[in-house]
Structures are given as structure tokens and as C-alpha cells.
Length: 230
Length: 197
Image 1 (cartoon, each protein chain N blue to C red):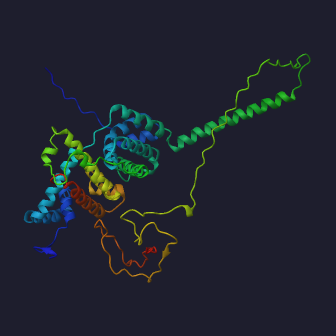
Image 2: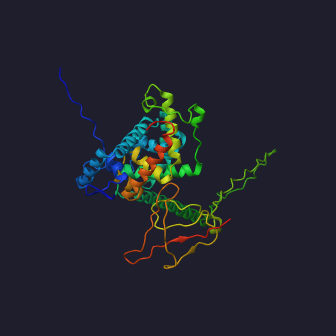
Image 3: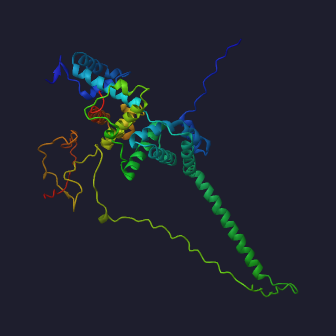
């Protein structure tokens, strides 16, 4: 039976949406709402579904996580302040950098000019710099030189070192076939070489979305991987 | 005796706060954090199951959201955008740190066939049972596929509508409905071993 009283059967997901109040204030969904309400009134299993949904909501609300103590929040806020504050707008950052660079350039130029001038001007008579002998201390304590901390290398993996275990997301537009991890090369089939004859639900009863031929004439790619039979 | 009505303090909109933050007003950061930290924490806690990780995810989420403000182009509200960033940060953290083991309920003395009346469990007087129920629910949540868990938490905890959840996750409303439906089925299947739903 695909209809009831001439109307299509409500989907259990539509009944759940009704239970979530998704039809409230939605005049364009008024007819769907009426259909669901009539169905629920005359079908106990639908009413049971809504009742179970409400009880799950009660459990959820009764187990609201307790907020952390004020001290923990203050520590978190301090971290956010420290890490997020440098995020000044780009134009402010640029202006600050420009000013700093300009200042450094001016200082360097001034120092260079001063050094050139001083080196070119001969000392006046009587004002020669007389080198005094540097007194050598009797005892010298040699402090050990602490080596600078080694630079931490950023390791980057090459393609051969990366193994893709899972392609997640229910909304990917490709159908991945084969057991993970995928070993070896991934063979891409050409259009016309593959035909899908049957699609079965996964272990969690979710049906994969399989798209057929693109009405616009495009090609929907599919990824195949060899299955190793042990 | 004169009676006056004290008007409620005017809340500055998120958009105004963000504009002021972009101009360099540091104090705005405090207001944004104070405004959304509780909600962000509840979402992160549901996804991760413990306070320490949830706090880390909230920190990471806020820092990412505030340092990537140019990427927030106003196509959604700041709240939904922040929740997307926080929930993704929580899931990333969960993957990095591995799922922490939750306390087995068998160790708490509940037999497999024993069913607790829901009204008893949620009675405020039975505080211990409430904590056990929270752990039970976290166990059930942990068993959900990541996509279903994130979708369900955003809807149930953050009270986002189907449309808002779809916007946050970049998926269709139909996919939101499917994920919620299957998530509820699995949660009920796990919980019904212990409580009557």
C-alpha cells in the first residue's frame, strides 16, 4: 500500500520532523502536517514513535552536562585571549609591520651614516685615542656555553607513507567499493565498464546514495578497489 | 511609593560585536566568549564525554573562529558558524586522543534485564541515577557514526532547526532528517536495555 485515503504514506522521518516541531510556522508544509497528524491519530505505531521520541528528549534534557567551575572557565578564557588576540585585522597587522620595518630601516641608515662620518673625520691633535692595556684578571672562570635548543623539524609525509583508511561523509558523490585499507593502485573504471545491478544497506541499515546517469550528460565517477580474498 | 520598571539591558548584536572586534576592540572577545561558552561547552561535552576534552575543544573552537573571522562571510549567524567550528574541533580532538573509555554500567550493579522506570531515573532526588544515565547516554552516543553524532548533538543540544543544522554541516535537509532518524533508532536500541523508553 503506497497511499492512504488517497494521500501518500507519511515517511517515519516526516513523523519525526513533525515531533520536532519542524512544521510549526511553515504554511508551505500545512498539507504535510495535516497528513502526518491524521496518520498518527489512526496508527498506534506512529503514535508510539512520537512518544519514544519525546521520552528520548526527556532523557537528553535530564542529563544536561554540568558546566565547569569558574576557575576552569577563567583559564580557558585566558588561553583564548592569548591565542586569539594576535588576530588583528590584516590591514592593522600590515600597518604595524610597515611601521616597524620603516623604523628599523631608518635606524640602520642613521647608524651607517654616523659610522661613515666618524671613520672619515681625522682625530684632532691631542685627541688621539690612546689604547690602554686591558687588565687581565688573575683568575678566569670559564662559563660553559649552553647550546641553543635544536630546531624542531616539521616532518612531512610523502605519498607512499600515507595510507587512506576511510573516506567519510554521507554526502560524497562517489561510491567507494572495497575493504579498507586500500592497497596498491586505485583502478579507475571507464564509463561503460561498470554497471550497478544491486545496492544493499550497510551494517547500520543506511542505504548508500548511488547516482545514475547524469541527466545533463555528465559522468559520475566511481572508485573501485581490488578485494584481496584470503 | 513610586514603582518604576527597569528596562532590560540592551543586548548588542553579534554583528556589531564582530565589527568592533575587527577594528581591534579587545574587550569584545570577552563578551563573545561569555555569550557562547556555555552552549559551546555543552555541544563539545556531548561529543567528547568528559570535561577536560570539552574545555580544550571550546578553547580551540573559539580561537579558530576568531582567527578565521574573514572566512565568516555572514551567510549564517555567528552562533551557527561558531558551533560548526567548535563541533569540528571536538571531533578532531576525539580522533586525536582516541575515545576515552566510559564506565561500564555492569560495574554499577545494573543487571542486563533490569529496566529502570524513567520517572525514577530523572527524579532530582535520585542524583546518582542521573549521573549513571548521563554515562549511559554518552556510551550510546559514542557508538554512533561521527556524522550522525554531530548532527544529533547540534539538533538536540544546540536546539538548531533542521535548516540550521543543514547550513552548519553543508548538507541537505533530507540528509539531516535521515541522520537524526537513524541516530534516534540506535540511541533507543542502546538505552532500552536499561531504561524504558
